[in-house]
Amino acid sequence: MANNQNKFSLSARSLRHKLRVAFALMSILPLLVCIYLISNYLLPRVGFNISIISAIAISAFIALAGFFVIKEVIDRIASISNEAKLIAAGDLDRILDVRHPDEIGDLGESLNQLTQRIRSNMDELKSYSEKTTEINVGIQKRVLVLSGLLQISSLISQGSKLEDILSLITAKAQMLANSEVAYLLFRGEGQENFSMKAAEGMNVNSLLKIEIQEGGNLFKKVIHANKPLVLDSENVSVLNKDFQEKFHLSNTLALPIYLMGRVIAILGIANARGSFVYTKEDSELLDIFAKQVAIAIENDILMHRVEKLEIRDALTGLYNASFIRSRLQEEIKRAIVYQRPCAFVIFSIDDFKKLQDNFGLL
Image 1 (cartoon, one colour):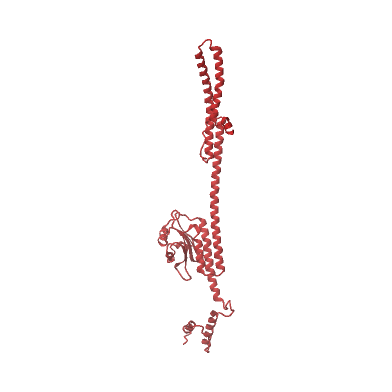
Image 2 (tube, rainbow, N blue to C red):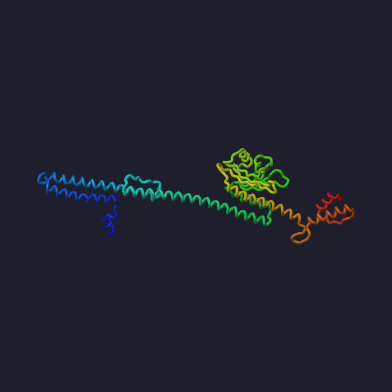
């Protein structure tokens, strides 16, 4: 029953269907008027057939004129409706053609302004999304750095081996700037050349064999000027070729690690990517790990010095072997000076050999 009602109802029809109904309704009144005039005024003078044809022609002309006027309005409304559907579907680049300064033209202009506002809002949202993504990436980097620093600080406070601490620092540094390799060059006290102390990433075995001379050009700026070495697509020099030949990589960021005014190590990250540029943030984050390396090395030096200064064993409370050896050597020297016999205890064959070498004992 409802379907039959919709079938004969105009509310569920399109504008074009309603236009046809309006044209049919508009044709009735002119047709009736023409028939009335012809039948009362023209029939007595003109033939019957000519009168009917004239009435029909005049009615058709008037109806067609009204039809084209309404059709022009309906077509413009239908065109705006189709454009609005495309805009609603996501095509925000469409612009309605507004030619007539009437109500329909005002409607098209309003839709253009609304579309422009939506486009600007979408651009702002896209910009905010990109900025939010960059902020999230930066936060993740700093969280990883903070987590690594906590692990490194824990190892240093526990008195772990220096090699383990340096390996952990190198592994954490590799996570910066999506690096393929992280390396740590180190030279001990009294040494001039740098040797590879720790390395993480691809081709580790070949990296561990690398040695850097203090007078070489590659890290000359890092060693003597205490400045970072940056080699990428924006910082191109002869050193790029030297670094590629030695490390088989294209880009690197290396920072000096100095202790008491002397460069003792070089911490660096590297990759083999094209058109790659290191940012200021990468340098700042790597500098944090470089400072941790300096703290770990200094802590290790101080621990060894403390061990040499200790005279009692921490577990038993007794004098340790180092103190006993030093006291024994003092007593032997005193006995030699005053030429008196001295009794001493030999702890091992090595001690006996040292006594022989130092004092010429048989």
